[in-house]
Image 1 (spheres, each protein chain N blue to C red):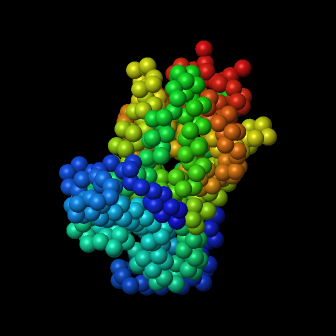
Image 2 (spheres, rainbow over the protein chains, first blue to last red):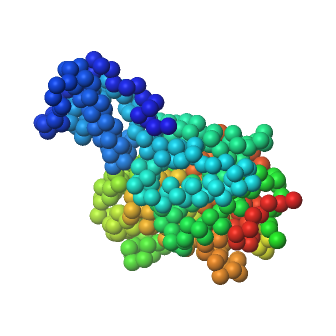
Image 3 (cartoon, rainbow over the protein chains, first blue to last red):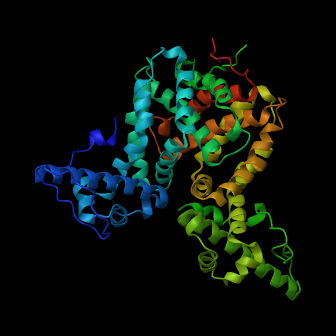
Length: 234
Length: 234
């Protein structure tokens, strides 16, 4: 699910405000009623605000980004940021949802092979998401904000729990499935941080398929393995 | 922040930075000559600087902390910070080493039970370190800086590799032991972030012993298990 779908569409009455920047408005189609023009302009402004918010949070982190700096980047009045998104916290949530969308949508589209293959399926999917720098960079930005600010952490926690963990947990049948999914996720979160952020070698340069082979058993163990027994293979 | 609590401890574990301080270590005896008094005063100033640096990096992160702010916190001239530690980068490294000392020293003192029990041993040790808020807070501060600044990441990477990973890897006999140790570490890093920073439930409230039982097999698998076989226990 994308942020676009979950956030309220701009109201027809939304007044696009000409901001501090004086870039010309995008060309409008001729012959449309004025209200449709206004709606399209509002939609465009909303998109610009969201793009500016993602860039601001990525570059400056949650603490330093402000409604004012986001408005400046989008060349709109700060009041319009409030109008479309509300508080800074809500802007962050909308921006983070866009960054999470590829992962959340992908998880929703995974073909279920039953619990026995879930470990490998998840590791492969997870690495696929993180191997793409265009997807990785905004995800990392959200993670960085979450690790340094309590409000961002709370939003991140809710998003991860609802959009990622819950989608995996519902495939399992054990009463402790939430803890199982979280331990599996912890394995992958740690790999992401050590491989893509800290770039610790040889992990940073290992082939994805080698990592799948090594990680899938550990992840599968968390999801469906016995608790408290050593899962050493033969 | 409890970072200050651990700052109070004597800097025995802090490695004197090579070539930075020319003060001899203090000989705390009576009737010492004036030069020894000066040395003791220098030592005290150095400790104050280190404590201030740890607090500054913890509160403001690597980017925002400065030699000037560290000097102000220690009530010394900025030139003295340079004198004892060198650049901001070197101050960070010295501060991070103090924060890492409990983990690094503890790892060095683990009684080796041979590779078969290493997974459980490491998980128990790791959770012990992170369960202590006075140890955890400064570690988290270093991790946060490393995740948001490339220089801090490089220092952190070197420290983790030399002081933690290498101490575990030398207990293993496999040619891929570095990758094995890193995947095991990734499991624990992910748990630390999800349990202690993001506080995702039920992981955040799980009993340490339950986590040992669940994590030890996965960690052991990485250290000594077969590659590419599913380690499901019976």
